[in-house]
Amino acid sequence: MKALLPALAIFLVLGLTSPAAAKGQTSTPSASSEARQKVVENRKNSLTSFMQRKIKVLNAHVNRLEKISDRVQSKIDTLKEKGADTTKAQAQLDTTKSKIIQARADVLKLENEFPQIISSNEPKVAFQILKTRMQAVKRELVDIRTNLSSSLGLVKGLSESTEGEKDKDGE
Image (cartoon, rainbow, N blue to C red; front, side, top):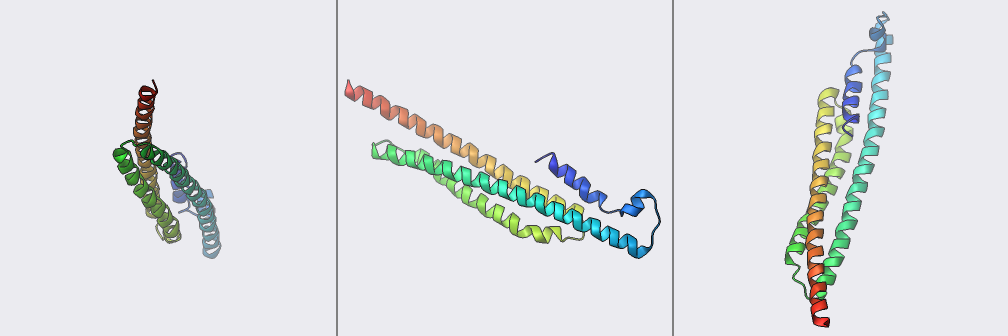
């Protein structure tokens, strides 16, 4: 993703000159403006398809994290039935679930705001806003993954301690 964002920025910046001006040719004002408009439309279409792919990837990532949190919740419920103290793990998981909900809302917001951003008269500024928002969502997802990992570590610790108690009772 990091490699594509600078490439798209260059792509948008280069769109500020017409193809005729880039070749050093002179043309009539109407022909150059038509060519420029066509180039701008092509860039908008390319950026739109790029964003659709990125939104799809971000949604898939959120769905994957949600499935993992559901599995961790299932494990916590099982341990709670066995009598383990799962308050820490449950609190951590609740925080993670609220962050997942927020991330899903942020991805949806990014998807809904994209048409406004792309229709801006200043493509450099618009792209910078888009890039910043995508990076924020990505950081959120990394944070969620870290929280899920620590929740899972707490659950594994609880699981091992309950199994250890079983072994002592059984002997």
